[in-house]
Length: 335
Image (cartoon, rainbow, N blue to C red):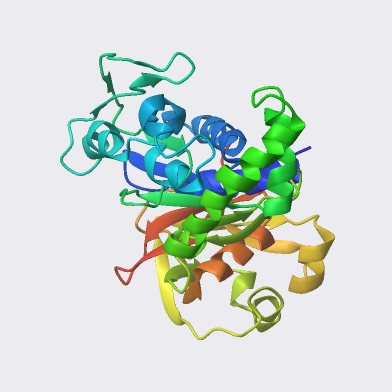
């Protein structure tokens, strides 16, 4: 049986797989928020959906120790301003994978443990690559296609991080001091100066690792996106339950798709929709096949709520409607 975490990460993977290629994805958050674990799991989920996926850690783009610690080993400002070589990362990774780039990127430039520079040849990315990068302060002067902010309370992250790094930092007391004075002090500065949660295109609540909460997806706070519904998301009761309001939409059609039906077993979905028989559409490619529905405009918080509402028989994808508008839609989950 699919777990709550697998389901939420699957929704994020669907969102990324539907987009242009190659795709540069940041996994951002405070220290010990769960970025690396999520990045690895998300990379695997993307690969399972048939896209080329790779995981890269910002550990390979740290500055040398002499630069990282020049303001003091415990300095929060030093960690914030001197930890990473963002200029090299942008030049060697983001620019080659961006518009007009040659798709030849570097995977690392330093061995962090040995504190020695590495001059490895670049890797040529596949045209459909989704590169998932985890690290701190990733929304400072870097250009991404998607940013996932892993939102974990400081007290939770501190507990995780100090337990994880007790041996590395020479004991529990030393680890607690490092988090309080350096890592999380720098993270608080980052939150105050950059506002990374509001700027991110995806926000994931990660206080409970087993049950993460998808808070927003599809764009920054305040953004509006198109969602095409041919089923129960058109009904007022479902909209009020999941969006807190009713939506005004426009009639539209989805060409090249044929409508079918699926039996829902989730009691919460049945209760809100009032039925266990829901429509579902499958791609045929035949222009004679069309599915009528409603083009809705929803916030990125509401798109996340729609992702939570739809059961695992559906996957979200980008489509071109009969009106010419591009919109998200829930299609049949093909095996």
